[in-house]
Length: 296
Image (cartoon, one colour):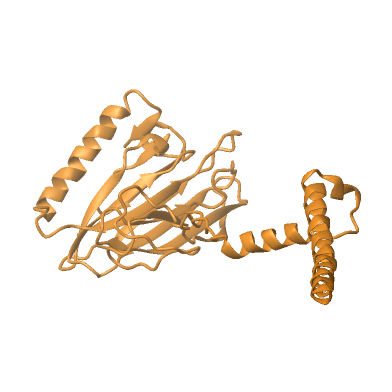
């Protein structure tokens, strides 16, 4: 009986000794967690906070990545107008095709310049005369919102000149439609000598203006339009003669051409176009009464 009691006491003592290390380990772990929560571990930077690393890794693993929507990219549309039915991203001019892009752009046309020397009347001397010319093909657009404008300038425009200038631009149109209209606009700073009878210079569009001469502040003129059709092609010429003002102000001629096809339902005819030319001429005759403009 005594032996059994001794064995039982020894077993209890042994289990007590086995529980002490476990209890000590738990108390130590609790102290580390408490110190970390209280911020004490901040003063011991070399001791890694294993629990902090564990929970941070757990949050990173479960975090859902949110993608921001891409920023809108503005298309590089040359001359895009509101209401466009088609969007073409391009850094260059679009091809000249009907109904491709509702746009509006301007290109600089080429004018060839040269000069000749002529005998000067009266004194037996010589005088230099400047010349310029150009062959123009106006693209006719099938879409009125798609206009290709071409701008042409007389030699050294708009700077002053002392030599006389004679220029001729021959105008044709593309053959992509049966009927069309060409619009000519005189640009700002265009000016010729404003004298009676336009004896020192003028401009005209042949054959529509016949022998009419227009001079003075021609920049004030309204746009001039002429009718074209494939069955009756016209040899259209823009003629400029300019004696040269050399008065310190701008002078010469700059104009812009654009063309468009007429829709099938249009009732425009050659006879109606002649009436349009007459109406335009009557308007500038009236305007010449109030501005520095002469029609001869």
